[in-house]
Length: 571
Image (cartoon, rainbow, N blue to C red; front, side, top):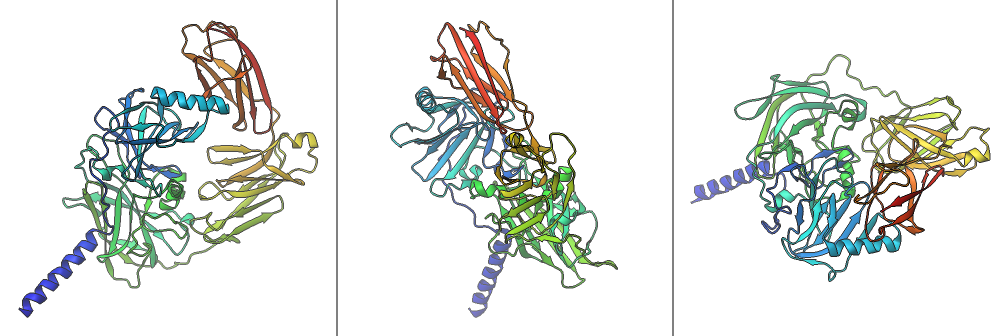
């Protein structure tokens, strides 16, 4: 009896150990088959939850619409329309439905809503004389049943092609949940895959190194490194992976779950589910941002950087940094798992073997530490950073370039470079040149150039210094902008007969900055135009009745330059 009891306890202990190794995360328990396919065609995906994107994780499913617009979109369950959002970028035109079981679904990049909702929205837009809207609705206004038509699919907002973006959120917290976990009909029997393994020397910042690239190969039982033993030059290391996943008949997806073990002890892991939109920017700490910015390659860290506060990592494991206290060979295992429980395992060995000269050198006098407020100050530029701005230590670099053009209002000040991300907006102050006249001072904007990105903002003046907030490092300069923005009709001319046409399009853009103002009036009354990139579109409605009309357009840029034109249109 004692032997049997001991054997049972031993078996339970072993089973518990195996389970803890195999399951580093508690598995969510969401209602299955409560939500239906929001389209009338079988679900085929262009993107999954957690896919890697610039500055954010993808927070829902992108469902393909056969490369077409205007497929009917249906409520995935009963509830009520609680919110509608209209914006130039992002979701474009979106509907939120709150359900009685504690969840909210979102449908984005839509075209027209169903007629009653579309009319309600348009009345609000005309009352407020504002196209972009974020409207919260009472439960009694627009109740919906499961499968009810709510809108037509489209390509609005920050969409690069026709599709439906679909999300499921927890209503109370507004955290985004992985829709795959709710039993949507998406067949998947394909395991995730490894492309490459990377090693980091964690005695120094991840921004101050290029990782060691370790080729891997597929074997009969999984994956392994091509070299029999990975040699580490450092006692403190971490790993990263370039990996992907697929469902049946899909594009390549992002990884749902990963776990890293050293000698069968869990070191770190992540699971992409259950976090809010603001935390999605922590993708820039969850990947090797420097390598992505320089080469375009995505590498996901299997460790938590010091300033990474997103709640996707295993609570029962360390931060993923591995300390090799000896020169013995250690077994490492990385396990990838998708939401359908398909798994792939990469196994390899690692050994610490330092080279002759194994010191880490720091060349910058300005070392910016995550978790504390940081400030840099030079003769012509200053910058203030919040404690939450940086994810890892930054050995800050600065250089200054003299005035190089007649329209330059300051020196060019290089605040580090585009390969280091920031989480929060930081304040930049630039000193203007001494001979800048008061007239030209009113036409000055602060411009940022960060790799391929350009941004210009109208800051505030304090004496001879302009202050503005940005969210990227790079080259900053004050420039004088006296050129009005461009405004021109697209596909029609002044005096055109537009009978039979669905609407009119205007192109409006500025060479230096974003437009800060757009207003259209038809016969002296505000007229609704939507926006896609630099194009403003009006769909003819009862406000544009048959006959001759005067259309007046006024636009302005950040520097306050104004373009105003009047057109005659005939319907």
